[in-house]
Amino acid sequence: MAKEGRYFLTLAILLAIIPVALGQLPNPSGQVWREYPTGPTWQPKMESSGSPSPDLPINSPTILDMVKRETDESSWTGQNFGLIGTNGQKLFVYHNPAMQQRVGETVGRFLRPETRHVPFVMETMNLTLADDFAEKMIIDAEAGFSSTDSATVFSKYLHPIFAPKGEPGLHTQRISAYRVNKDNIPKLYESWGLLFHRAEGDSRSEQSTGLKLVTHNGQLGAILVGTPRTFFTGHELLPEGVQPVYTTIHEGATVCGFSLLSWDGRTVDSDVHVEYTQVTDVERKTQKYGEVAYVIPKVTKFSLSEKGLRWPVDGMLVVIMESQRLVERKIEHGTPMLSKIPYFHRLFKNTAIGRTTQTVYTVVTVRQAGGDRGH
Image (cartoon, rainbow, N blue to C red):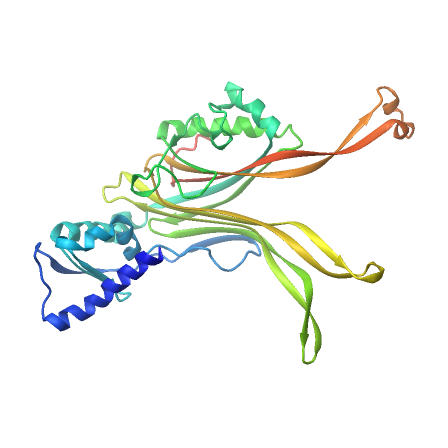
């Protein structure tokens, strides 16, 4: 990524130097000069709950970003060399007419009045399942499962999609991305509803529906849910004496999404970024007589970030991230009959601590507003 940035920075510098040095730009392949507007574009839209961290983990893609994404270095070198740069208000491009047409279409994807206000809906939900519960659901055809791969347990109505430029895989581990056809959207939600209903009967399972955010075409949207937690993590020796050190950790989730219609309006390219931070344990360091000297919070953090996921405009994008965690549960066993006698049952009860693995599924859906959810 840094190499690509240096490459286009060099082109921008050459864009200013070459006309001065040569008086004119060479055009062996019919290169021509064009200037394009770069705005106005939408400002990021945020929906927050609690007191999340104020910083977004990603920036909104610009028109220049999208042009660079859809072309490669070979498009700007050799016989068909070209130059591209921006001053923040205009995009300057020197290239052949075919490339100029591609650049013009990319600019139009952001700024065309007829598509600028097209709305998209991004939603999130989390589902935590004990592994043995998930295995039972996988073999239950009514639940809509068709695979024993835990990363694709919702795959009956989902069709895998590829990374940008047709690459065979995604960049983030333990993530799956799917397109859902229009007719299968109601069936998918019905299948999920059945799964959630059955999960409610299992004490080890949890489900939660996150926030919903509506953004415009070409607008970055962010859902932030979190709470700051402050910990006393040590001391610092200063000239005025020993001062306590406090560390604030923003515990929660950030989900960002960006969707852009294609030039013909048939498909959508979406960027999705999910980031979770959770304090899983707090280790206490003690001094003499058991006084707490300071604490060390143990933080679990994971994220996914994918760009250019393409899906049909009348369908839906589904991104599923899988993570696992080990949890402890108190298990009580008692002698039949005797264990039911009040107070007396305590003499015949055994308590043990058991460990089980839970799988957490983070599901992000993106669709055009007004699409049929089926419920």
